[in-house]
Length: 223
Image (spheres, rainbow, N blue to C red):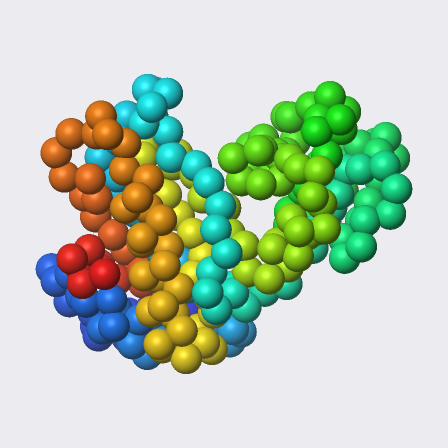
């Protein structure tokens, strides 16, 4: 633990906590200050000035990053019959398995006729943001396309109660320009999602982090 604290302190010394960096500077700093022994995930967190209690100010959706996430998602599909590309396909058997504590998957996709069945898993899948939803393209008849997108770098995002949206934009091992491109693509989606009824400054703060690494403030205007 002491070693990690020392590494974290060294990383923090390279970051000016009073400054908001340009997207290019922030990505470079994230790569430089990463001290994880594995290929760390790079994430962004938007603090939005929205009221998620209002139906027209809820932000939720999905997109495919231009350069992927660096991770191949394990996809579970609720459907009748074989679905090419999925890691797991089933019906009642998967419901029973998940209720028994099995959660060895990253994405859940379902055909519309399966949603009554999947609804039984609301308490398990809901809090983990794994519940299939038409808004994120995970309730669909075109399961093959949904599986392909999920395997190819699709991310989902959702504003929490505090109006914070977090998303993965890649891995530390990515070239800096690819991380920047992913970041800008996600930022475009967030900006376009601004509710018409939201007042004042939309993005109140924006932070870039790596797994175990310190947060780096980003200047929204640089995007």
